[in-house]
Image (cartoon, rainbow, N blue to C red; front, side, top):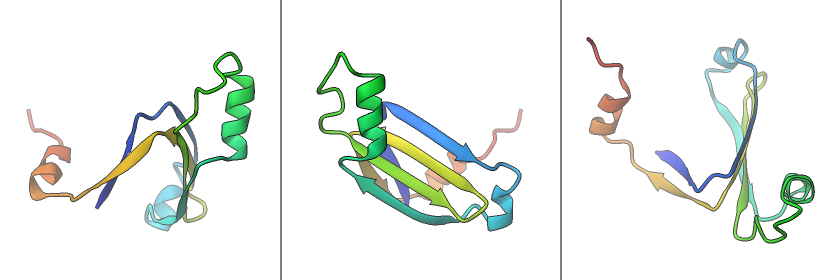
Length: 96
């Protein structure tokens, strides 16, 4: 199963690229919230001239198993998609 975030407007990551393989790239937890401190900070500092800029948006937080790190995305929604054999093939590098 793959989650696809729609209409993402902000992306923040704090990933330990050397430590991530130690935890097998596992996700420890994830959540989606309609109003967070990060959204308030973005609204007040970066979007102060557009008071409704984040209306209808959500804060998606994904935490990797330590020491992996975290990813935060502000997006309008998401879709869950089945990963088919065809989409798996597209992810593999093409030999030239």
